[in-house]
View 1 (cartoon, each protein chain N blue to C red):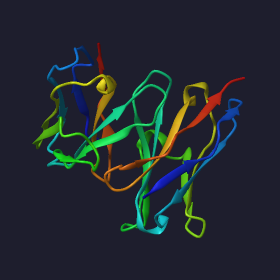
View 2 (spheres, rainbow over the protein chains, first blue to last red):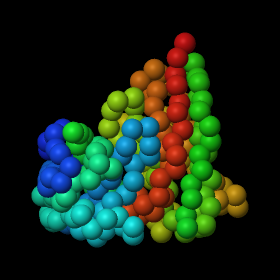
View 3 (cartoon, rainbow over the protein chains, first blue to last red):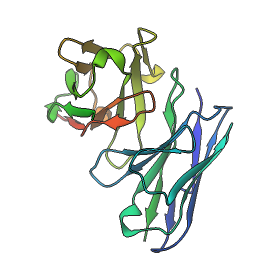
Length: 106
Length: 115
């Protein structure tokens, strides 16, 4: 199975900051990579799929990049509503897996 | 717009089984992938299994093979996840997710396993 390693596991930031979260796959997954945002007691929300394509309605301050084994989620001009936990997700059909999560807090 | 509505919370004894349902609105379940993901309290997301219509097969994470069954009633656009031989570590929120990109998430169903 493919393992997804996310870093950091948590980070402290301020409104207006630029935040970068990385995700590494244990083997080449091409661009089969998605990012989710989860707030407490809520279901995850899809932000990005195919490594860099924004879901409809997601603010442009979110961006994704990478291919192969190394991926990045970047949030520019961090807003109060962005404080949440973020997960990367490899969704190859035969063995999807999630990263461990990154909690972005004040 | 696709919407996903899951069944309500459950409390089960160890050794029992639970069946969670997932009703789809705005799309035909026969044309879209359906996945089940769980999240234990304070923990991360864990993929359990998926049904991909194009393949016509259900795949399960190795950890759940033999203990989890995922089925569908396409006439009702409803999917089901049944888990047997429950233990306390199965206490979690169980999510139904639709789409090849895991686009649409249900609200989650809390399953509590306690004696």
